[in-house]
Image 1 (tube, rainbow, N blue to C red):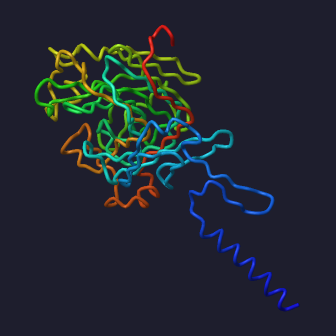
Image 2 (image 1 turned 60 degrees about the horizontal axis):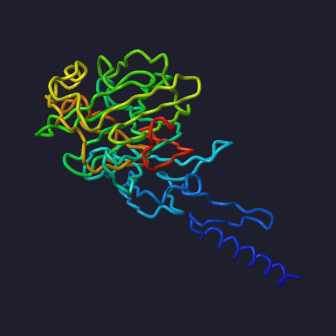
Length: 350
């Protein structure tokens, strides 16, 4: 009898050890004889992941996203009804070559020019933006959830879609920025910002701790919205939708600039203190190689606002300690449930 009990204990211990040693990314993990827990990957939720590579907020790079996930950065969550792909990144981590801001963001493998075009869609909800930062700085408390990035020339961005919410507000703003493809010296570049719901980027606080008025028609954290970026024959068609909000559309010519002679008033005000007063080349982004990006590109960083009152947000970063940043609200987190990427389409077919 004693020998039989010892054998049972040994068998139970053996199986327990096997469970504890399994890798977190195993596709299936048997927990009992009657139940099976299935691990879902982002590629199971949004199956276009073979079109992308990714850079995570800790500097991890991966170009094979089939059955790939990483805890605390890129994974799947269920809100009780729906599976979502989560993109999470701290205020300070390891950044890309062209930016001082961290990201957990997809980068499109296929490249294209505006004349041939492309289309990106996304349905998402922003779950968190940094709760520290300087209210005077336009980029504070913001995350970019989709963009087009140039892969040559100045490597500027024809569009970045932002979500921004001040810590004491319930509602945040969705807006998009067009970065000029600067004529000559790119140090004079700037972004022109257009509001979708709420404020545009130029609406900032009066001092480091005082926010502007809360937007009446804004979007709350956890509130779903969608966007479509459709570039067709050099024209960028934008559509933004959210339940309970007006559908908003924009059209922007990427082949011919409207910023070749004079500065918009928004730019004179927002960028005056940092001397950004360049003009755009006449043919804008014509013929220049582009690609889409999607995820969480955190705009809040630890740089001093005294050096750049537009982009240096002075947020808490704990010397780059990611765990401390996550614990203290110094991160961005964006959830997507649907997204597509492909060729641009004629606007009358939408």
